[in-house]
Amino acid sequence: MTTAEYPTLSLHIDGRSVPAEHRDVQPVLNPATGEILGELPLADAADLDLALATAQRSWQEWRVSTPDQRAKVLRGAATLLRERCETIARIATMEQGKTLHESRFETMAAAGLFDFYAEECRRTYGRVLVRPTGTRSVVLKEPVGPVAAFAPWNFPIHNPVRKLSAPIAAGCSVILKPAEEAPASALMVMQALIDAGLPAGVAQVVFGVPDQISSHLLASPIIRKMSFTGSTAVGKHLMRLAADNAIRTTMELGGHGPVIVFDDADIERSVELLVTAKCRNAGQVCVSPTRFYLQEGVYDRFVSAFIQRLQAVKIDDGLRDGAEMGPMANPRRPAAVEALIADALSHGAQLRAGGERIDRPGFFFKPTVLTDVPADARIMNEEPFGPVAIMSPFSTFDDAVAKANSLPYGLASFAFTRSAKTALLIGDAIETGMLGINTTAMAAPDAPFGGVKESGHGSEDGPEGLAAYLVTKTIHQA
Ligand code: NAD
Image (cartoon, rainbow, N blue to C red; front, top):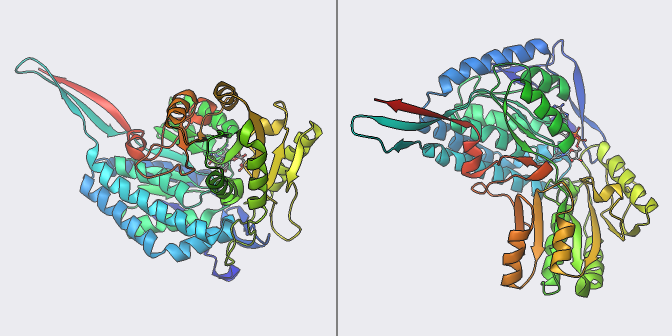
């Protein structure tokens, strides 16, 4: 596929594709080469007002749709994503950088989420309360209303599907602002919904200057719910905006994944799983393993095995056969990671592997291992969102738990042990939204995905993800 095959970009408002025309545009880059792939139109205030009016109108129609109608659209979109997997995956890799293998997997996982909500939308049950004869109280679940959703660039297919599938299943309308860095993937998701029969206006896609879009949409009384995935700092800003209109929120924010490897763990297997997880999407994953706490008895062995395996990872343009890790997604990322590593080294950290850009076009960065990083180095407190593993020893279970729980984050955590008792205890002790014990697999359509503390609130996926778009009404009848 060449740049010429990259699709023409548009907004999607009120059932129509909206081209650039008089609007400002922004280039979309291929992170493997730095070349411009296309020009993205940016929505202006009039576009957003039209999207809001459309969201209000289409919600009135979609809220009374039957579960069968919703299921048909969602199932149809799942089928189309699978049929179009190769095209969607190649475009996602071109604009985001991850390997083609990862993009294919992401497309299929996104299809699975559409399928899950096609089924789950039948299960928006209420309940009947026990009352004296001749009277009745019922509890109903209703769609919350028009949704504003903001998706980041790291999963350019799956993030938009997360933001669209549950509101559509619940009977809401939704205005999605996907990431400006990877817009074509989101538009292909939108196209699958349209081709599967989603009525015009139920879902709309806008791009623009992020803060202008969010300020405009969240200032409108039409929006009843906001869902955001991104950094904790931006999330807090959006929660303040949402508060002015008492808009409900689901916030999937940053993490700083602790990994605890106990002396009795299967070291070979844990190294293999953790290197793969660390290099996935060049570390730009909110559930990426980051702070490695290794029990003293296995510390040296784990560090050297990890570095050896890490240095064998094949880094290349994600479209090339055999690539195991692609570039970082945009020029901000290598710059940010470089600064964090420099700060750690100035605080006395040891650089054991990587630590620099790769000398080629694009935004490639070497997988990196740091040891002896003091707790006050920035990288021990800020999400690196890159291929960096920080390794420290620990002595006792309580020591490991205290270190893992020491940050204000609580998204994904990992523990490796062969002891059932240790696994049980660590499950209770870690402050986290998700914990992988002897696994790094976190996301599944039926499993709630989300964090605690400053990693956010509310869950996506699973029944919880649908419940997030429903409100409760109680009717008492005499
Ligand atoms: P950023 O914090 O500026 O942006 C993160 C995301 O939020 C982007 O998709 C961006 O378009 C969006 N955004 C930013 N300001 C916004 C606003 N005012 N209104 C609506 N959306 C807004 O930084 P970035 O350089 O894109 O990414 C860097 C950091 O973001 C990373 O270090 C990581 O912590 C976080 N991030 C997290 C996830 C995740 O899955 N949780 C995904 C991508 C980025």
